[in-house]
Image (tube, rainbow over all chains, first blue to last red; front, side, top):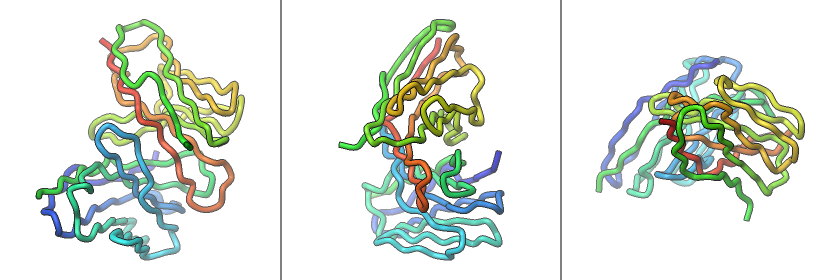
Amino acid sequence: GEDVEQSLFLSVREGDSSVINCTYTDSSSTYLYWYKQEPGAGLQLLTYIFSNMDMKQDQRLTVLLNKKDKHLSLRIADTQTGDSAIYFCAESQQTGANNLFFGTGTRLTVIP
Amino acid sequence: EAQVTQNPRYLITVTGKKLTVTCSQNMNHEYMSWYRQDPGLGLRQIYYSMNVEVTDKGDVPEGYKVSRKEKRNFPLILESPSPNQTSLYFCASSPQGLAGTYEQYFGPGTRLTVT
């Protein structure tokens, strides 16, 4: 299957910006997603970006896509302790596709 | 409230004892899927279903079965569980044929331990 890679851990201080990175191998990826998993809970969709976009901003979240390098990032501005969670990058090849391919997840720890 | 429910949330069992994890969604979604989550491996798809009576293998189907007799339910069956199936399992559902985000809605997870 497709490879989606993330670093496993990230620590930041409260109030700083967090940047979580993701690389993928499938050049036919159509949608790229960021999911958040809080302790003991399922995954919740945070945001997504279509492959013909370079950037998407939604309040404190900024998604950057470098399609040439197959690199996706999620920036969280003014990181809060409530942002501590595991963040998963995922990609799919087409609308209504049968599967999402998930990265390994990055555990973000926000230090007060 | 729109949701995906799974039962049980926690299960400890012994090798070879058949078990079923139930999944139900109340959003009339056509697409349902099962994932397992293991440390350092992210989520891997086990099986998925595009509609009633239509199921297909995902990336790691060995040792699992599923059925989709009704739209709302998608149980995961382990006929003869083994310790390597100890994992955290998630059920998810999604509207089928929706142009755009293809958001999946996840259940709360089932932590299974096979001894």
